[in-house]
Amino acid sequence: MGDLNFPNASEFSPNVIELDKLLELCNKHKGKNTEFLQDVKTKYFLTKDPKSQDQLTKNCRSSLVAYNILAKNEIKLTEFGEELLQSSKDSQEMYDLFAKHILFNLNGLILVDTVKAMFLASKTVTNENIIEELNIQGASISKSSKKINTMKLWLTQAGVFEVKSWRVNQDKLNELIGLTECEISIFSDLTQEQISFLKALNDTGVETSQIASDIKELAKNTYNIDFKEKVFSQQVLNPLEKKGLINVIRTTQGRGAKSPKIEPTEMFKKEITIPYLEQLKLLTNRELIKFFQLSFTEILEKINSEDTYIKGLALEALGFKIMKLLGLKFVETRLKSQQTGGAEVDLIFENTKLVYSRWQVQCKNTKDIKLEDIAKEVGISLLLKTSVIVMIGTGKIGNKAREYANTIMKESNLCIIMIDGKDIEKISENPSKVTEIFNREAKNAKHIKMLNNK
Image (cartoon, rainbow, N blue to C red):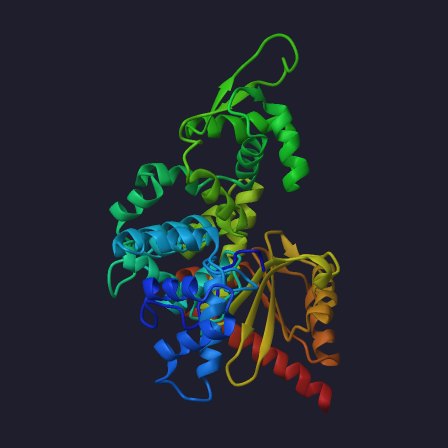
């Protein structure tokens, strides 16, 4: 998965501890780990099972470290912890400061953005569903984790979320981060190229004009991002200027005549901008997520787009929606690296009901799926220890491809399911048909394996 992380929060929520009192204990027992743990256990965990009291206390201490309140190797408040302690005489000030820290530094903005997007898409908003959405974006959180609910509870203390609800108080959020809802929307569709360019601009620490091509090179080298040279201005500079994040000064002479100069705007200099960009950079599927919200019909329209990038995203979203209809658990998208020998797999799902199985999904927007396409996925399946390969194509399944898939199923434990353009049309008209289609493929696989055993 990606690097989208959220702090551990075991035994560290406003339902378990009192933040101001805990801060006082941290300060009181500076450098004294044993005394600190004993005091925390006595105050908060003596009513728990005696066998678990020590572990619960250590979990609380670890969470203080994860939230950057306590130093890692000793009982000592961090710089932020000291600031939080100073504010603790006024509970609202303390909770506001803590919420701002969560939003700015602990990926809290991503949590809030995710929840808001789920409400807009009329999705059921629960802790488990939010975790799944975050995992799609690049996190790796177990459904039983307390991380997200605890973060929500702390943000609720400041008024960011409504009590006993996931509804976001937009006015309070605006107050804490210093942006209006309209300004927040400026960041929502930034591309990775635009984010990397802005981060590189910030890295220079220069507020006066600089040559745009120099910033582009810095972004390429620092953030390993590729820019399309011929359309750099159209795809990066012009959109950022339109959003009010940079001013573009076009030059006609002297050094850099072929490249305009740029300078940061007041909007770019706001305190929240760089922390927000840092969080957005962690998201692995920002563009794809928008397609997940579309209906089957809308996705199929996108698949027919002349833009190959749009086609690819739409097809991947189609595969995602089909697999979710089957109730499978999403694991990864566009899995690469050593796990697949450098090859690419569009989607990975798991079935954890009764018997565990891993499903490998490849989506193809081509006239037909060929034998070579199946062979590539079979090779990758050995590395991923896949149980089921699902080939989804908008065209036809070639005869040789089917024959090869049947041969593989005869000689191995693999099951290969193939969904063609006609199947997709049926699912688009009636999503419940997905079960019928997969049952058809499963029966075919079972028949082939039974014949091989005779």
